[in-house]
Image 1: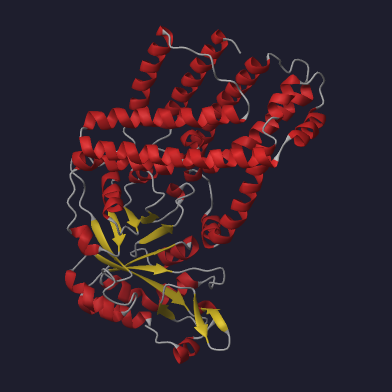
Image 2: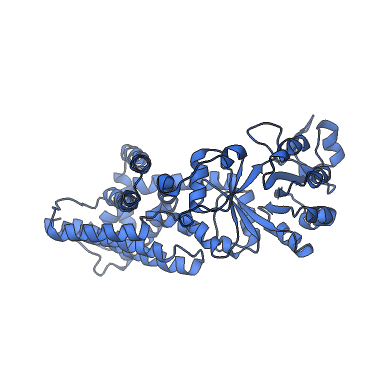
Length: 505
């Protein structure tokens, strides 16, 4: 690969990074799957062209007349693209996750079963990555073969692979993730020290470009594409300057906050407890903390087999001689025989007497009664209306049942992973997990004028991040700390750089 060729490859690489940033900017305010698929397809084609060009220039060979090898190249590329989805993929991973066109029942099922699914899919992902690293020389070997026999090339590549190479590249990839994390944290820390909006704007743009560049160069090195022998030039300098300007424009802001003054935050007491001052989901906690007069107390309820609702977060309780049993499969009398139980009807009446509005989480399992939403609203309709209590849940079906029976009740969707096109769901508000929450999801939902509550924000850093990103409220175990939080947008905007941890890891 000569100097001229290497220079051209770098030029193309930089242009593709900028185009990718532009594509992401174009879909930054929508979660509809159609424009996301269109923009991702363009990115995938451009990235495939970059890798093809790099391998062609490295080997000085092509697939001229080799139909089967071209197909093998395409299929291998698609496999690599799929394996790259959990690892940023130049920022497209989170965009794709946010745009999945899931139905309400699909969303609920995936959320309920997220733990075993993550375990299974994570295991398959690790196996796939191991195979991809072990066969990392396959694409290059396709270019250097003298005949159109991709299966034969695959066998030869497999024989040349080694456990040592697999271990080396696995550790290198892990190290690279640590370095990227360190870069993001370091730039955020630097901005916290300098406290200048222009520096924030430029450094965020440079960081975004650098992360994409590092990811592409790692993939090129993994696939044995030579990216060396280039030297600084006037053309490269001009291209770098244009790229910096574009990256600052496209991604430099990282996330936007509400004008120059953050909106008033709705503070929601998580499970009715402040700083561990009582037992969660109990009437005693409700009485103790309602005196602070926070807008809402959030709490959890479960339905028993005989259609009573009790205040409980966990899906199961321990029954002597029978171990853990799902609350859905037990009668209230059985549970009360072995455990002190707060019946939700009593809790609700106390809340109304104290004039404390609630956000009630209707807990859902795979064994939940199909008519649980109907049964809930039939039992508590009049009491719920008195203080304008709200209901949220991962169970979209049950929220719809409640809404059909009593349109006055505001219902909200709870998410743990912030995946799928959330705008498609017919709810009044959203309660979104703060760790993976990003600006794109917030911007898209805000266009529909529906509130977003982040949970569970217990640390000052996450409280500031959510506030600056423009959520309408926060569910927290530290309600007093959140109320006393001092926030100045320009001083604290460095926190938003940490959003890149969500987008690129």
